[in-house]
Length: 526
Image (tube, rainbow, N blue to C red; front, side, top):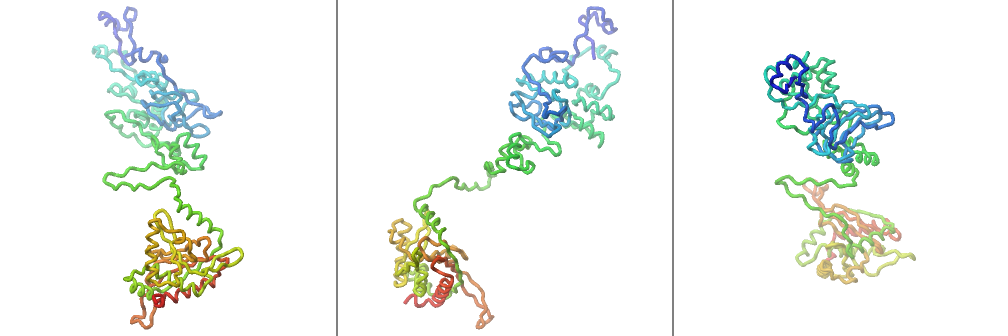
């Protein structure tokens, strides 16, 4: 673009094209200093590495860069995936072999390169990136980055030899102070297709124009070129259609777990699926809990990890396991509770609890059906002479069954006082063995919790256990009522029995007797 004379007296001769004198043309103004980038395409004398298109299969001749996972200027580590290459077999990640910085991307996204051809240069030191960019231009055929040109005399800038025969779009931009950054293939296609490359918007790293951009411009018109940003921004990676960005380890884990990578949301850079994403999808790793938004209530900290059993909890666990060897059956019945509730309200001021009154009613029903109070022995049925009603009580860290002994013989007032004493001892942990292991029949009452129906597990060594649910109100027909309907209260009880000595008919008759007693409970307080 210009000729520089060493002596002022030689200007006329140099301008006239006389090369016989001492004056000699200097290197082009666009060339970088020799210390930074050697002239003539020679490799720089500082440490760097060249990333070539790898042979991903024995039949692969060329590869297409599907996407760059790192941009120019980004730091990379050995073993880190930096691009995705489409071979003749599949899309595969290509990893960096050394630590450094991506100085220049030679083959852009969507472009093809032969196996062994350079696709990028990696600088060992970040300061060497500008020199490697200039060297990369000699490898890719792109113009060398322009350096600021010193002021020249008007005669030199208008010299006939400095004017090219035909100005290309790139030179037009250069004359205006800009430079078209495009791949060689993109420039060739733009010339063949008659596309003004200076008006094409580049989608490659740093706004580089790719072959795909030229094709899009030729097919859909030439959109206006975007204004250059004030400062270079990191390119955003958008995978090619049908390509799922994932690390090699993530692909291996997904294949082993038979998971579709498309169903996993990537949390890595550029949305890549990482190994942790796959482990979270398989349940091998727990996802990181998101922090609460400002002003939102703090999340409740839930317990986590193993908590060893206490002695009581281990005993309950062992007893539950022992029940698995017992063949049981269950029978349920609804019992009308209006009369029983009225009786309870009359004796409640005297200190009688529902539990004591219920234990009395069950004990009186057992008197008429002794088989319900029996237990199984290998030799036969063992009948218990005493009717001792054990009632389950939930306490801190476990469950225990205080026993109301001789419940059929004692007054309800006495049973009420005894029950209050037993519950106090149970909560304090001062029950004697005879006060919790001498029961012959068990009641489990969860009516106070609003449970409508449940089944209880038969403890080992017992013949039966009665599960008592909550009282509920129902509307039933009544011919004597004004509107032909009335409201009643009902409670569902479920009897679980050892089927080795107690049969279904025994349970049914016991429940019928209990229903009769509950509907006519007056004798319970006599």
